Image: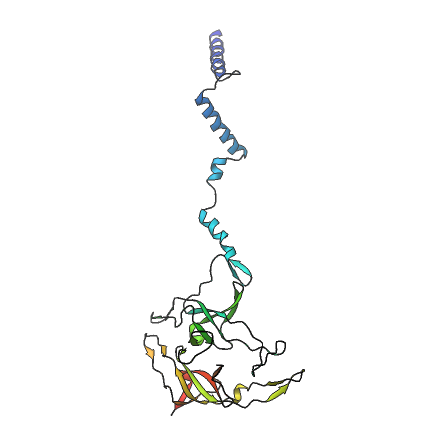
Length: 290
């Protein structure tokens, strides 16, 4: 009976002696193996107990690319909101910076508080890569380049505020004319796509009096405009789905009859008179010629 008890007491004595080997008195150097084990146990205790583990925290940092993209958002602004990169048109979309608005009458008298004439000119600032036809897959290229000056219709495009200035996003087929310099010169200007520039007889305009007693010319309604004109300039034509250019129906010097409400008036200083004005139509809107 006493033998098992003595064996148990001897075992406890061995454990106690081995445990005392881990006790470090003041001024004594702790063995490297014990220090490493203690550090590992401390990190384990932190993870188990909810403590912070700096080694794992370093591995959870955000990728450097995300940080760089967030830092560039302040460089670009769309409709008074920061965006993370430049505004890039897609397919056949063109971005045009609109010329600054001027307050004038049709006779050229400045009336800042009475009548604003909508500006339909601007500078191309960005273009898409072109559009592929959904059926044939033929790529239709953009017809204008960055830096060109362009004329567009009164109701074309989607207006946006980009980088603090008014811009329009529109299809390149909505553009009427491209030119160089501040003013349009017919010798160097070109019609875009299947556009045709015509000289037509000007419609007589009535007058009305403003509150200040200044006579202001009234614009003629579209229903009273003529539908006969002489061709002044012709575009190269429009590309069809097969990739071929559609031929134009007329050439410079021809007289044509075109559809009602098809013309877009283009104001070119020095070329307009009391008798004639310039309008732009599409090739497909021509009904007859002579």
